[in-house]
Length: 429
Ligand SMILES: Cc1cc2nc3c(=O)[nH]c(=O)nc-3n(C[C@H](O)[C@H](O)[C@H](O)COP(=O)(O)OP(=O)(O)OC[C@H]3O[C@@H](n4cnc5c(N)ncnc54)[C@H](O)[C@@H]3O)c2cc1C
Image 1 (tube, rainbow, N blue to C red):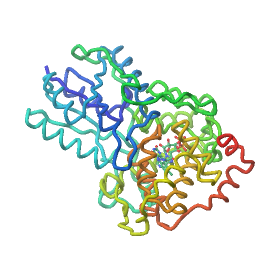
Image 2: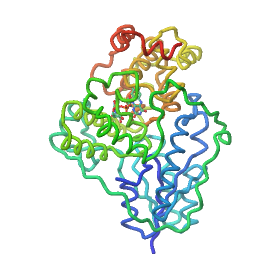
Image 3: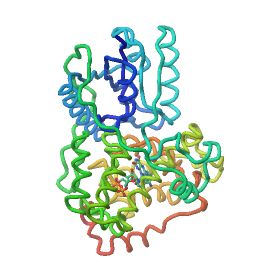
Image 4: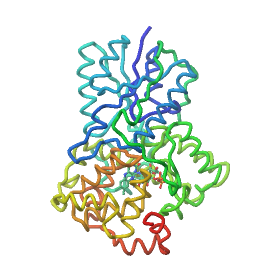
């Protein structure tokens, strides 16, 4: 009987989980494992832990949900608090696994970790198989070689829309054969040195982690409130739960797949209505794909201050006082401060807010953009390596923006998107 260890990372779901499906094709017994490494909680060179409170909370909720679902199918989830470099080879040995399956990564550090694990597994004659499962369009279905990935989003989008197709979703398994998996042990926040942040009553959408919560949000945004029908008009909003989809955290942790969203949207369009707004949700998912493929092509470049372009335009230093004022929402620029306070209190900020605070950090405060990106990494409930570092580099003018000198006039933006200062008043008073 063959055994496969399934090392889960940002794919905390049963539906449309290609890694799990592939493992189940090749092995009769499955051992699902996830790691929370000490390095995820330690401060990086930029001074923030990779995973702050909001990320950890969502992650734990997603783990509980997945463990419950796995147990109902005859399996369960092992959470290791060791680094994956240590935990995965050691568990593969302990469970006498024949294979380890995990999803394909594109981040530089994630690739390094996978390489270390591959090396250790080789010593015990176990293969590490990586399975792509992050994107809407499967990497094998790109209508061009990765080396020919267009430098401009529109070219990428048009090529995919014309010459490729989104694959169908995979069903969740009905039964999983596993050896006995011990009960899931989730540490207390205090054991991790984290202080709980109470729910802020102004938080319009307190994200609840997990596949079932993600699928419920998807259903509600489409078939419940039908807010999807007005997405294109509301997506630049700042207030309330439904101006945008709030799918991001579910996508980032892999509680739902982009394909699942796509096919549910198709069903909604067939049963209810298709319009520009329903299309625009897919358009945004293509941006997400684009950043993933850009990082796959150049895994290191996004973490350099000179970015994709090798540009010298953003070689600013760091003033710790300015960084702190920006983080605490005390810059004196009301629109920026309101957005930064929302992020500090909730772990979320609208796309409009993110564009503005990032532009302000890079171009007005003239600070090293990577500190801003690293703070977002720690704080955002929907942190995603490619979307975060890709968007930051783009705003800083060292990414793939065809107009790298673009910057926001914050006063104008505030007047346009918060004309009565309702949003600013909510977060500043
Ligand atoms: C500086 C900066 C940092 C960002 N960091 C992240 C991040 O770490 N994780 C993340 O998921 N998004 C990030 N974004 C993109 C975007 O702001 C969020 O995806 C969006 O605000 C999440 O809310 P939503 O799900 O309601 O989005 P919606 O507007 O409803 O969009 C639907 C989905 O499309 C995708 N999407 C939308 N806009 C973008 C975009 N610009 N880039 C990539 N994908 C997009 C997301 O998956 C999103 O869930 C960042 C943007 C900026 C400007």
